Length: 580
Image (cartoon, rainbow, N blue to C red):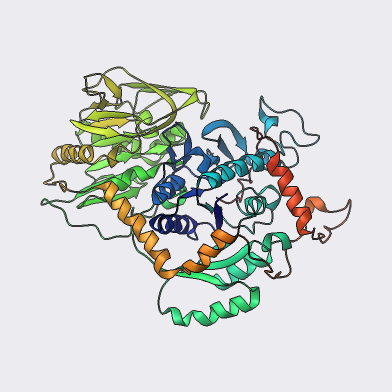
């Protein structure tokens, strides 16, 4: 079986995805057959594999870094938030249910919990079955390790979420089940990185600490020699080395996991916009709708010289935009209501009447239509859309997951579809994307308003340039698309930059030893260790200090959990205050 490593983090957004992708690219350039893995992901940015499975876009990006085809094995569990308290559960690439946080956690009163009444159809399937889910993700990881030289796993949030450890399958749960060494990444740009490393380790049980093999500092600015004394003191305190100090790198441009927070940055990338080829720039405003999904669709536009992309949430911000995009969303009806409440719906109607370009993608396409019948996602029934496109949408229980190929504006187009809404196009000036023989495949156009279900279509270079020429004409801009921009080549350059960060600034010999040899022996325990869980308290008393089971007992327990036949019983980490 191939080697493995788990990249954990002191917090969400510490840099786990970047480090995992960088290690994958560094290894594949050395001739190592490597694959990425994340047991459980929480994200609205997802991707469709060639076999029609839905996984997180971060894992698809890491697969590209490893130069392998994305697979459902790489992200067995995907949670897609539908509200602050519930998510759609995607298991092995297919949606299997919508659950509340309590339903995941299996707490008191949750469906399937001891003494709880039987819930809605299928609800009790998920309660309190962490072992079965751990077995499923462990089997996926083992399959990847059987077919690859190495598997680089990404954790979620922090491994020291003490309220979630009992149900953890993505951090120390999978590390212990698969006997993986763990490197903890900390974002020094936030401050407090030494306290974060020490506290993360000290809040873990003795058995979990035995897997923490080292630390990696991310986003360091300045003279690294000033940091080195602190790294030595950290090693003295914990008995663990720091295996890399990665410098702060601008404009990496990798796919993000979560659009809820990133959406309001005000800019897609930190890199400086390249000058336009023509006399004008082209301004693109993206409506930051609730539960925005696959906002990576606009990355290809931001890569074009002279195209300025920003996210907006006020109608006045549309005034100088040459193109407005209404992106995908996990809540089409909710996003429609938000647009109306904010005054953005009226602004879109005025734009369309003036012949100014608007593009709707997936959920954004659906709400631009005449009518939405939704008894699945929002259960709102029939809702009137904005009426900008002659489209009627009915939500089906079966999700469409496809990788289609077509033609639009005389250019080949590739994309991927992830949606419950089924669109019936009743008119329009033309089909937006066709099969090249005059028969429409998806979407439509009316004047300067376009709509499509296809994510990723703008990554097709010829189509993107043709579309931008149409937009520039309609907007009256002297904008000329660059003739040689290759989005695929730019992405490869970015992935190589990640590999360079690891190769130049990490202790690659130490990383190789961990990947090949596994968990180092004799790693010291850092007190106090994990506190007892309240559920383990004796009746009427305070939680007892947990007895530390022997390594053999822990191994036996994880082997038993991993060997159970996998089913579709889930007990995922809580969404309330949970980690990604």
